[in-house]
Image 1 (cartoon, rainbow, N blue to C red):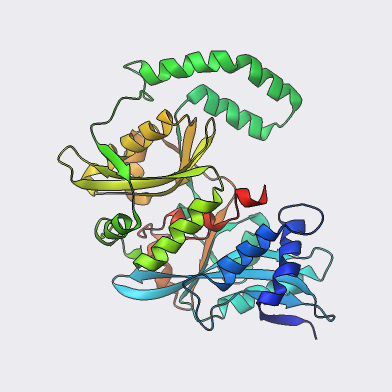
Image 2: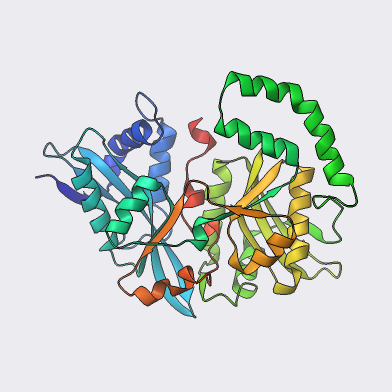
Length: 368
């Protein structure tokens, strides 16, 4: 009989092929790197426990035609441990009875042992279906902040993404030198809001131990906080770093001129591209200094701009630092059998960075 069952090692080839074909829009069989990715993320992540696993939907011939990946995580809600489960790589064969399979997979997901079921990478179709099944949109964490660093190149990059054509590419190659001149002026003129100056703060490589200390001490005012130990944090950083989904990962600990730790940041850096901020943290009195250090570091490494998930606690400082806000593609939605558990997310009182969700767990350069 068709139905849902737990995902096991023997399902990896069929599920990887399904994801390769439907989500990656590729032909042929999935590369072995995608097999390894599914094995590490869904069967060997450090948070796995009974009753919180990924699922497949198999047809009458016992072939997997749908998959819902689940990644358990741990957080603390006002000092009490809570279990989150993130949905990932949700896919159904479009040639099958897709609606039935999709609904059954989501039902299996939300009936797990977790306190909160959540996704931070839902597309528009997933958003509609999840809402019909009791999920709530989390508006504040569905937004991005954006900061141009080389404003004319950043603007042209946006145009090129919207209008992919040879004409746009040709014009871009012609105006490139003019963009460089305009961007140089924007970074140097004293009256420019995008001026770049050497920060007084000092940066050093962020170790897992230092990050764990920061996470346990700095964002303490938030009601919902990530709960890592050294092993889970090291696994997370290794998983993200080796995939280089949007470039290489820069991990920087920030100290003030008295060598006191005041914050940190992690972001993907790729020359000439928009960098993606994975996580940002700062003492409340030093947010501006940490942001200045982040923007200067990214500018020095040749990025044209930065994007990051909305940080409600930093919103005022982000605005003052010439950032703007947008929604671009993905939605964050959450479900709980105890609805009051969702209040910190809905109210923006969670320390919920991209590293603390599913967003940064995507495959990277190993599939290119």
